[in-house]
Amino acid sequence: MISTKSEIPQSHVLKALEENGLDRRPANWDSYFDDVTEANVRRQIAEPIAPFSLRRLKTLISPAALPYLEQMAQAAVRVTRQRFGNTINLYAPVYVSNFCINRCKYCGFNATHDLPRKRLTVDEAVREGEAVAREGFRDLLLVAGEDPKYVTPEYLCEIAARLRKHFSSISIEIAPQSEESYRIMERGGIEGVTLYQETYDRELYREYHPKGPKSDYVGRIVMQEAAARAGMRRLGIGALLGINDWRYETMALGLHAHVLIKHYWQSKVSVSFPRIRPAPDVMDNFPYYVNDRSLVQMILALRLTFSDIGMSLSTRESGEMRNHVLPMGITHMSAGSKTNPGGYEVDVDATEQFVISDERSVAEVSEYLRTRGFDPVWKDFDPAFLDSGEAVTQDS
Ligand code: SF4
Image 1 (cartoon, rainbow, N blue to C red):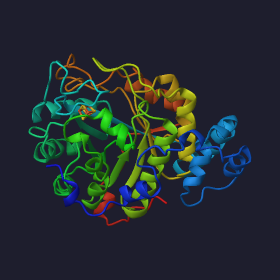
Image 2: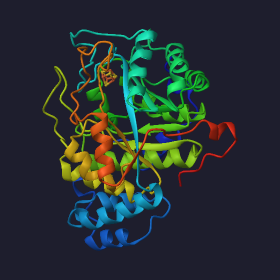
Image 3: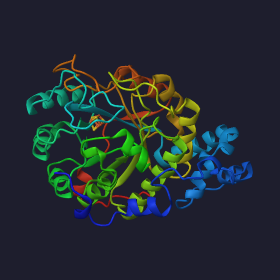
Image 4: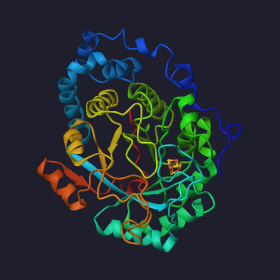
């Protein structure tokens, strides 16, 4: 199921990370930002967003930019409004399995944990999807741990086929698959793949993913490209914030996004900001915890580097935090999420992957958006666009 490096065509992403010395945190990290001045920051804020520049991203995430967060926020609000209007796309995850053969040190579904495991049958997954559809969602994300014997392309295609009438868009957040498996799923009505690299630093990656297929750094980093070649229309990327310096991860994430946009322009790229959350039986002392101010700087810097990229903030974040950053670049939000298989209806007591922070109901989130002048958009995409042959626009 999982491709090995030798089966994969050359990876533009891996090549770019290696060439820019970003497949690990640079050795000179302590002095990495010493060449960025406040004058550089002011110039970057004043300049319109041009084609991607790693130097611009570096400047905007630097410590020198900290006194300018307010100006960056004003510029980010303007850009977001121009490019996306007053809309926020709402989506919901449905977890279909909390079985997993990996041992990620930060995750409650870690294979070594003795917890009640649950896999949804196709009928149960459809019930969960229908519960989400009744809330108004038309954009669905199917999520699973790495459970290759059960969570197969055929299983996911069957769920997608039965839920298709309720959703205009169905995506997956599961283990990396072969290009051929992505192709099968794309033909089966699944059109998006979210896959976080967790950390772009090879050495730290090995430390946090000691065993299981996920310990293969290269096997993971190349998979968005396989999904894009297979025709997946939406690609979601991110780093798990808290296990490495966020500034380093932002540099690597920005480069990853740029390479995908450049080489796979038919697909729409979006970035997420998953800050590590408490989970049952996992380490709780993460050395690089990302505070609110740093998260805001990261969001602003990426928006001011990529005017058209999708940016997603999930219920991992508190309602207060999500309300605060809402106009600064965010385009997608989950709401009313359950992170346990069956959590909406089938088995509400099943074990969660992590504890969500924004516990507002879907109705409360959408009402709040309206009070702030945003239109909640339930439907990310209309498949009729493809049927009519309309071109999918390029990101940048
Ligand atoms: S993060 Fe994903 S792959 Fe790792 S243990 Fe959790 S569910 Fe499994």
